Length: 386
Ligand SMILES: NC(=O)c1ccc[n+]([C@@H]2O[C@H](COP(=O)([O-])OP(=O)(O)OC[C@H]3O[C@@H](n4cnc5c(N)ncnc54)[C@H](O)[C@@H]3O)[C@@H](O)[C@H]2O)c1
Picture 1: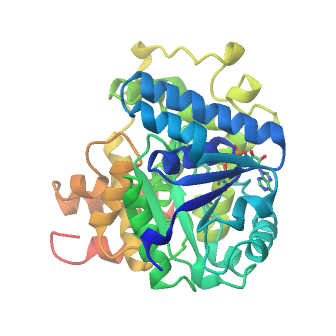
Picture 2: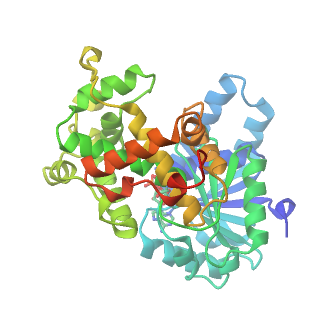
């Protein structure tokens, strides 16, 4: 089997990610069966796809014929799982991040889909190897990890689980390319794969700095916004949800160690029911869901932005040591295409003195009592390069 055998995609889950991933496949000319558990959910997903298509068509970014073809021929919606996967060559799952639910749905799909059909999960954190155990075709199960919003973000991590075949991985990479995405091969389904794992290191550092009151949330966000970022880290956490941030930290804590766990101030916010935008209060107030107004005159001078890059570089080198990627250039490819940054942390790291990097990492590990920031063997060894 090869990429030319993929003609119909079944999208399982029509939520935030599912509708976007479906749209990306439609834009690449694939037939898509969009499935969810209730009519109202598939209808909402379809509506969101159509709204996005209109926006793209209005800007002249897609030909009118494609817009019509998607609406009239390429997209079908259903709440019948057998119908959704019965003629699918590739199934992509984007349902809630609950392992038992994912395994149950994969077991059902395994029974209903043709024998040749590949099964992909868009999970951000769950073990794809474990999901694959629910099926009788673990060689055909892999990860296709898109980033939000899927239509705009270029990165797709193509993740190999314990038993995924080379053929499945090749089709996964080719599928990403057909969608005009940047596919990055993830050789092992380690926690957070590439981009989320590397980004967790600065998230831990920033949480620790806030926890100690070294900078205030508004001062930090003002500083980061003045560097050109659309949103500061505290506003982003509020926007995503304090509960989501806590769950992500808990997951990394359980899988990678205690250093990655949530800081007390985040747990307290969760306990108090201040979950960010959705409850009207988190780090900031969100009156009627409106973005907080940041006073740029409060921008801190105490925060060293380079530290966040140093800890990203260190975390990236762990991915080599753990066999997730072959080269650090692949990490940069993932980082650039999952962010608005013009270059990745590795590119930056190669421009600076390695001794500076080592000294700063050692200082951060001690100052914040986080062994995870200690320079890895890869950072320490190999002369002036890493
Ligand atoms: N939101 C993000 O930024 C993001 C980014 C990358 C990956 N992910 C991953 O994508 C997956 C989905 O996340 P989301 O943000 O789209 O969630 P969401 O809550 O917006 O959507 C989930 C959808 O799945 C549906 N669903 C629930 N049970 C189902 C079932 N048994 N069968 C079919 N559909 C079912 C829900 O009705 C809902 O429409 C998760 O695994 C998440 O980790 C999310």
